[in-house]
Length: 141
Image (tube, rainbow, N blue to C red; front, top):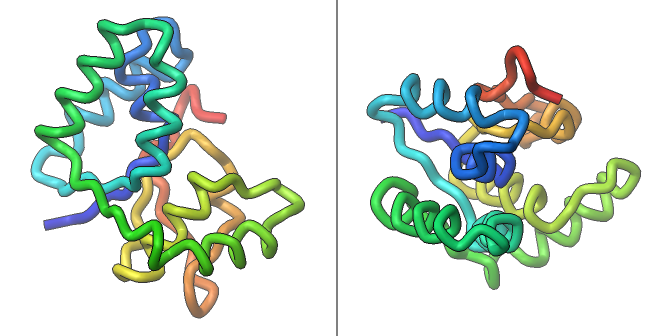
């Protein structure tokens, strides 16, 4: 089964009809089929904060999350590496959520991501490998 690590942007777009990427997020969900979606608790916090002003959207997100997404919660283990990543990419700047996803991918050997952020074109995995962003397309930043 293919693993796709999901950033905040696509998840916010799925549940915020006013988001510029809402339609693309719906297409993404239809296309991922049997893929395993994984994210981190840091990313979940970012999504929840963005959807907090629209409680129905927040609760729909949380219900969907608990049913569909694997939550990799290795924050304590990954934090030292996340700090290194944020320092390495401080010119972007790399935020905590992005660093948590890069650390997760390094630890678990994943390279496929769904993100609206162009920063994942810059971030590198071990041995200089690039991320494959499956959310990039028309309407992406």
